[in-house]
Length: 377
Image (cartoon, rainbow, N blue to C red; front, side, top):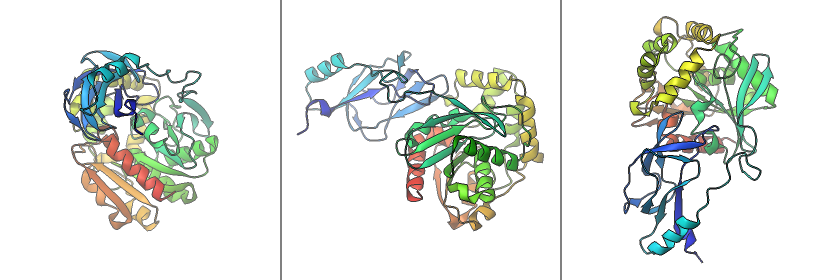
């Protein structure tokens, strides 16, 4: 029998990524009294990484909105309530009054207890990584040029519901070593394999974004026994075209004014680029060794405004189970590259999303990756 409490569904401040502890409500996209369906856009939340939309994970009527625009709330704080129209207001009042924010992550009884980030000493230097979940299937997330493991902040926990998921900072990126003994695609692929050795991963499903897709494909070709499947997100390595102005602009930017418009190129909705995201990337770019590492990688991979390594034909011939996902409005690598593998891959082009499709359409992309990994486990 369904109890009344089970018919009242809380909407809470989400947790996006390993370091998020709070978020600011910037605006509601549904108003009290609106019918809410699974996957509907409910509100926008700004974090220290990005501004993004919270999607409905339940159905019902939006009976109460508690999250005030412009106000910061801790992760898991109650910000709204869903219930059917026949649930009395008094019961919703009682539910709100009795709601307690669950223990913070890392608490003694917290489900996410443990370090947010770890480090592995590898042949490629010290590598920062995150590990989530404990499923029998292993997934490894590989970010793109100039990115870091937080590019997967909407992905890692979702995939960890049914797998053990690792996300790393490639050499020269994030908090990993900035020295690059070999800045080529082969060198970065070797660094991924070294990382797998260091943390005890025999084989994994590789999910690569942008340059990380090319690194993942190179790994599948060089060490096929270690790659169970590929999920390529707006991937490099599938055609020669690339937005060289973006690459050069990212490398050369030294101020918020220079960097913000470059970052806006990554998204269909430029409003997702927050001041905090820009400032954090500027801090990274000012670290010793970063400029040299980025220039060495760009020179090796994107020489004279074109991608040097085109791997689609070889990956198709290798019969690696492959999913290709692209944002239809990608302004860094053309969405036309999505079909480079032809019938050798499942292809999904997501509307109203750009190069960071895994952030702009996280629910859709996560569902596609989960399905692909499950079918090829």
